[in-house]
Length: 363
Image (cartoon, rainbow, N blue to C red; front, side, top):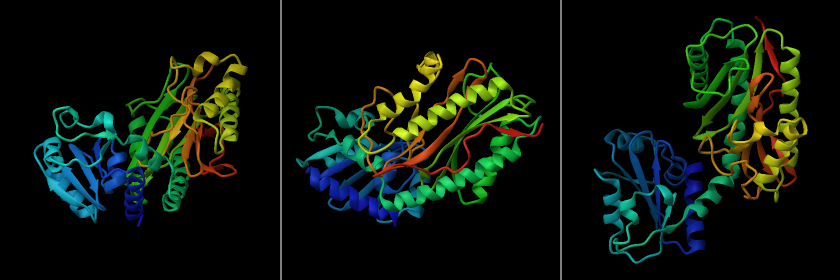
């Protein structure tokens, strides 16, 4: 069972680091740390797990979430409390043991105040390493997720028909994935031409002839997200669209070719960006037009390491990242192309099998 493997891994890491107790916070927007230690994916309110002495206690402030946690987790002591921070503070009160917190920047300030009679050191780096470096059982689930992402994109291509609204496409993909046992999918979409500068949640805009239709599909199995990014054209692709897309294909291939243990996230980003610079498009890889050149994947849709030229986190075998040079092109509009890859001892194993081409769908 993956949850039990993770739990033992956390206990072992804490012991090696001399940490007696770990306070792990989670909410809807930052749930991966909490899920890693408790196997609970929080959906509302706030939660804190206290990990110590081979036991995990989970403090939640929502009765609905407590009911769900009791049904979905095992081996965890669950408490319904009105104030998570003060309940955890009472649990820690009087202890002089070595305590850490993760992610420390999000832990409620009340717990961090100097007047508390316990101190919380920063345990974020320890959990970051565990989140980034996957167990074999985690990788096995991620492989299944990548296959599902490929299948879902094939279905997406079938669903794109002129006149359909963006929200209809996303709703159809939600139904498709849920029917296949996938309870969660992060998906953003864009359609149009040079006026489109990015992707967003679905709108009422209707797909039209000549549109570039972009999407990130990110289905999750057992809490693990895998992402694929692709672009298609409604009708025949123009020469400008084909020429622009070729830059993205060259960039993503350059990034993936760079992936291997020991190189940094910055090295991968630089390989992608240098392709754009080669074609006089360097401005479009700045934060004026784009956010990242990829990122880590796992119990979050967007985790460490961020693939940026100022991130010096070294890649290690067992990491899973997506390489995606998604950005605006002045001749075609916003284009996306990206594959999830596993870092192996010999380089990168591409998990997505969908061809890297500018797909055309019948108008």
